[in-house]
Length: 379
Image (cartoon, rainbow, N blue to C red; front, side):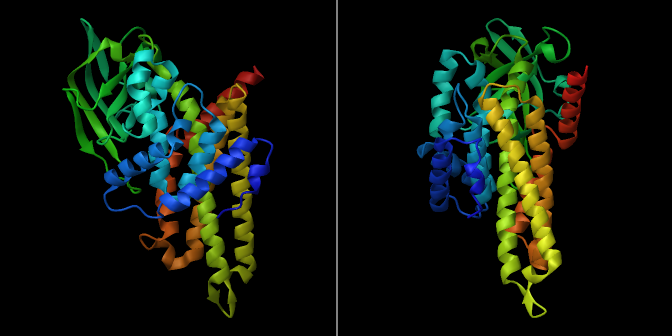
């Protein structure tokens, strides 16, 4: 198990320390290091297990404990990247409903998401609208008491296995970001098609969706007309810090694997750990992890105090994801040829970490956010 001394930091309360211990014990029993070839079924299984054991309640609802979410994602990611994915997407996919859903929408969807009976998805990105959300082209127009959705979404996590999608569409109340609305679209709604399953280097359920005359009751709109962008950004603000928590989990697992390798691998009549070059690299890896952890849990604590975390969350995500990539790369190097053998833990981590530097705001976008906030304060 990774070093847990950081749990003594003043960012945490006793309930967070208890949660971390309970989840670690649960994960040892229920989360295998490797998932099977059927990624869809493995993801469904993780959702059901997480729901049945009560862990999903931490990601769903009106009141979100950001420190708890980060601790959970860190722990799950350290054990299995798909387990972390399953937990996080339940929160992200239902986040808009938690934040601005009607009582009827919450009653219909949130309890099923929390129990693991329904899988949620967040459909925001498009082929030409990723980081630039305001450039989206998927549209919806009102026809009586329905909205008719036309267009595409892509890179949709849980695409193909979700029971419902929160879909963001251009509805034209105003130009740019102010003319977007959000709708809950059940997976079996006529006109919604899973047009393509997307295969990536770290297998996850991912798809491109196509909407053709897809009619959705206006009662399925989340929030007011034209407020979809605001809903999306509020949802992402909650979970962006937790992406950094997941990156921490991957980095800590890589550190564990590197220490085990360094202290047992013999060469030239000594262990790998006896070489000063190895010691220097291990020191650098440990410092990178602690630096990232301080930023992650500062941002999480600050959000839980009700403070603005736009800059702090961006710093946490940028530092944790970029740092984890460096830590994992160093671990692969210590393993030598074995480090690039398919299925070896550090090889899996090498594939898992790469997408975290892109999704929910690429590293370059985080740099722009940080600079923008600094310049705003300077003025």
